[in-house]
Length: 335
Length: 110
Image (tube, rainbow over all chains, first blue to last red):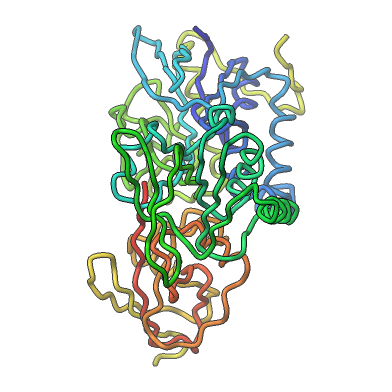
């Protein structure tokens, strides 16, 4: 069990910067994020896009902002649980919460700061009838261990980097790899596209373009996929696995079930300190809502800063809080 | 037509038609106009052609500029794509699209 002062759900820019402000008050933080690395939407959606409204930076690439934030918070040694979704929140004592993740990791703290952004990024599921009955019975949205597909017949669907990269990797592992895409051209990195074409010419990937997977058949486990090519009859294709790779979309997820006041997929907060309707739980960044809310990173930075002041008073009601400028006190990292 | 305001029609996912007014002098796009009228267009990426949540079908005959490579790439991530599919965030509000009629595409998938 991990113990900390503040559990920050979401390791995007706002969650990250909150570690700094908390550290100035000597509060330790542990971050949880379902993505495999820090940065949230910045890393996941637009790492190479310049952002123009971060104070002090006329222009900064989203990915660079994340790198800078990681450097800025390093002195405060935050803990990270990445690639795991925050699932269950329980109150285990008067001022103590226990968060359990999708992989069973348990973290305890008196304060929870939800910096979940737009929600948890989850794989987009293609609208194929019955796809949910074959999930984990042939249909996989995420590949954890490519060895699972050794000697099997696999069909990958999608047109981006993910679909290309996995087709290339599985070409050497699976018995048969087919790649189905709606268009004839792919949108991934040039060398990935070239490699896939090479493997297709060499007969190691069966490239099916201008086509879509439209149905699934099986008897408890997936046996075949129905493919529809533009202007042609549908046909069935025998497979052991269907791997649809259509990107990720954010969902509120379990956060929506913790008894928080939710409005338009966002958590209602008090602008005094960004606290929610549950004592000890705060919401900062894009995930919260209040009259006049703007979903800007810089607004989230401000919200995190005010929130940690309130968190300190909640955790240590008998201690005095001394407000110090970093120019006066410096940054005293944790040992 | 009032100066700088055009009319557009948006059919929602239940088939209801909404008549919207859009300004041509605020560098807006169809996704933003829909959101300003609180129509159910998520616009997750804020208009960067990085999410396809503003997927809409163009029902009228207007001559829209060809989709960029980024837009084509993103339509790959969308479901129920048809030949008249476009990303709302890439349709700029201008005099030339006065009378545009679009239909919000189904979101599909989870």
